[in-house]
Image 1 (cartoon, rainbow, N blue to C red):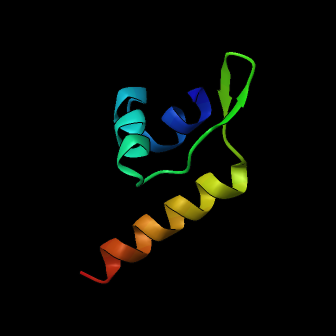
Image 2 (cartoon, helix red, strand yellow):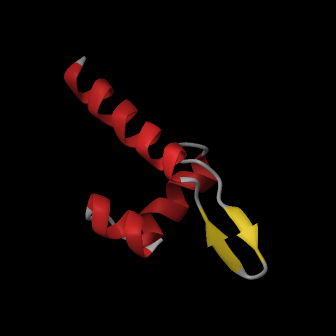
Image 3 (cartoon, rainbow, N blue to C red):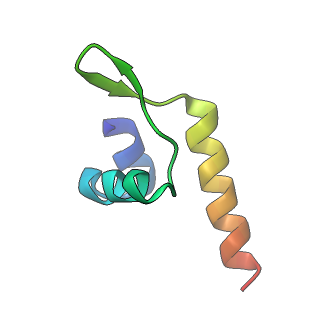
Length: 55
C-alpha cells in the first residue's frame, strides 16, 4: 500500500473504498498483510488515464 500511495498520491482509505466498490483490484492476502500485483496496479492506472482522456 505504501508504494501505491506514493505512486498515486492518494490515501489508503481512498483505495480501500475503491476496493469495496469494485473499482480497484482486490489485494492478495499474505497472512495479515495485503499485497497487490504490480501489473494490476499499473493496468488500473492506465485505465484511469484512458478514462480521463475520453471525457
